[in-house]
Amino acid sequence: MSIASPFTRDANGDVVDSSGTILQYYPDVPEVLADLHQRGYILGVASGCPDLAGCKQLLNLFGWDKYLSYVDIHPGHKFQHLEKIKKSSGVDFSEMLFFDDDQRNVRDISSMGVVSVLVPEGGITKPVVEYGIKLFER
Image (tube, rainbow, N blue to C red):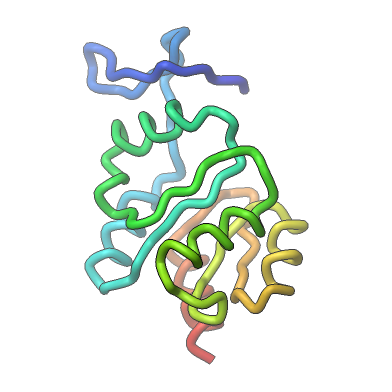
């Protein structure tokens, strides 16, 4: 499915793209973000999406931007994203936990010393996040 910005809310309160297609996210995402934030985790996003404005619009419309301390969105390798987040946050790679649905990114970022977790096809869930936290705490 292809979506295009700008993104808005329709009369029903749904987030829609420029063609009026309703956008949906993985069901656990809002609760996962709120829980991690409440537990004191510093959260960030690293995305290779070329539409920075559109991505930021979605983060705002879904209400997720309030949980994110670091947002790095631009075409490029995940290494570049995490390097930028490391530089701006002062958080070392060994103190980061990374989730991605692309095995190549998980492999590459793991080689940098970042605990990395492959997100299954069904998307990010509370159990996947808790699994990642347990790996990180070892």
